[in-house]
Image (tube, rainbow, N blue to C red; front, side, top):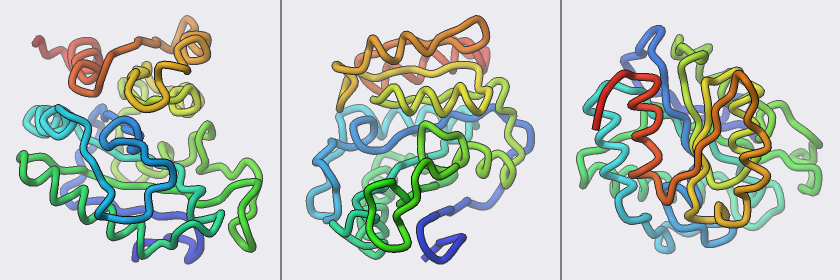
Length: 215
């Protein structure tokens, strides 16, 4: 396992850090894979169409792709870290079949309504807090000012704004259809917010605006 505090914080960074590169931070459930409500079985993983190909496009452009995921299902006792690890292995395999990979994976199991040692309110890693983004940046030397976050909840984008990213894209897969108003309200003069139908469309926003690459 890759638990940095031996309890509730997962951090796995691939080799070959790209110093001072802008990154794309991705939520997992509802963005890359179907949100099945506390996914704890690898057999239940279902990829969202086009998501793997979108990540592969970022890989080809040399843009670090960092997965940041709240995992309160662990804290609530619905599954354990070994189950999360199995789901992640299935995701890695599904991405590899499309020539795609993740450069880092961070997850937080702490929650105000969790059990035992996982019961921590407003943990600095749990979105909308920016802790996972900051940890990835510290270990990978990322350029946060030109990085983006993509998620299906306003809290995903709020974490990006708190980390001083360039902007965020809400996808309307997963919970996104019901989060548009809250997500758009996060925008201000320094944080751009866009809405896209899915990850394949969403990645074109940061690629064009932050990375200077056209479709």
